[in-house]
Image 1 (cartoon, rainbow, N blue to C red):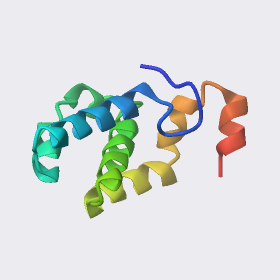
Image 2 (image 1 turned 60 degrees about the horizontal axis):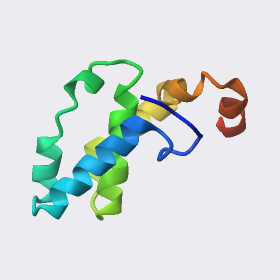
Image 3 (image 1 turned 90 degrees about the vertical axis):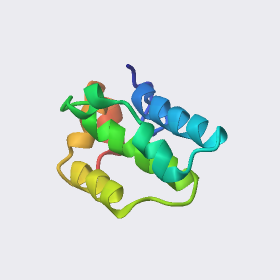
Image 4 (image 1 turned 120 degrees about the vertical axis):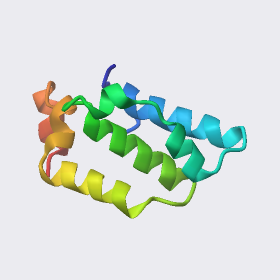
Length: 100
């Protein structure tokens, strides 16, 4: 997986999740069913990638108009702990430019 910029859409993991979610909706799944079909357990169990899963899911849900409160809370907690910034930390100039 790779990161090529500071935007959430500039990460392979996030993009994969958004694309999968969108594909499920295109075949007629509901938002809940699309979420249930996400099979990214290896990402959820990876400390570095887990925040990206929640960012991707929140982005996909936002795109289709319904971000679940528990998804938003996961993103918020990861962001506040700065865990969600770890993948961008490999490029210190990039991280400094977008840190809060």
